[in-house]
Image (tube, rainbow, N blue to C red):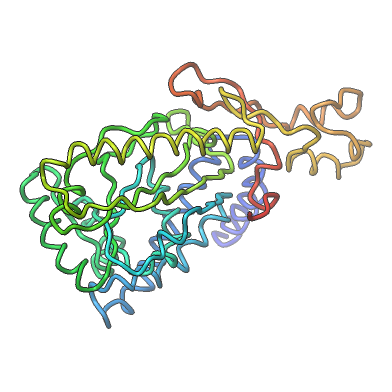
Length: 351
């Protein structure tokens, strides 16, 4: 009897999940986050025994990324990388990137093979999030205690020798805390101290704004296209500790300029307005295609323009309501938006 109820529940879940996915932005948001974390955790379990054969080796991250990157197409994320030649340079350097969300790590999985030998500065608390924390430690991540600035600085300085000897890149999020506010916040000095003391170049990496598809406050996560740009390296040879403030300012200004330009490009390419997404002309949603297959003569008309019976009752039952997302310009009231089909990963061709 219990097995029958379990089978019935499973069948209902399979039937209802696509409907909830298409009609509820909140369900879609949590489903995508769950898939992302589930892929990472599953891979952590699988790779921990393998990583034990070469513990704390940064090359383990390259292996893990090949499988973790599979989460991107599942949740409709595309990462467009520019400046790959800078990422792939066989030299030690300090890479600094803006930090908007945990999705930044998913983006890194997509192009980790370009960086090859690269490690990351991570907050100490992540180490205790097992199995991910253990797998990350076995992959050579450097954990720092952000509550004690001196300890954090010492840990970063101790990693410098390894970077130079093994020609390894050090990835740092100099903003510290991740924030989706459609701007790049002031940088902390730690990464720049490491670069200047070791005379290593700074490589700025810029993610375009997540405001084009993500609103964590209202739990909205639409298909996303992010441009990741690696700028030209900024040399630090000859610089001293006194030059760090100017170095930080120069690096941040270059990243802000690229951040604004690439965000605007994404908006224009996918027909996104300044206050949210607007549907591309002539496109249809998945629900539209489902409705078109139902009896009643709805197969040939776009969902947004069909009004004649008997189409309207079907559309009203399954058409998702307008989704909301924060202003792309930073701040402002949320506006109703529709997800353009052309924005889905499967409809976007790689450049």
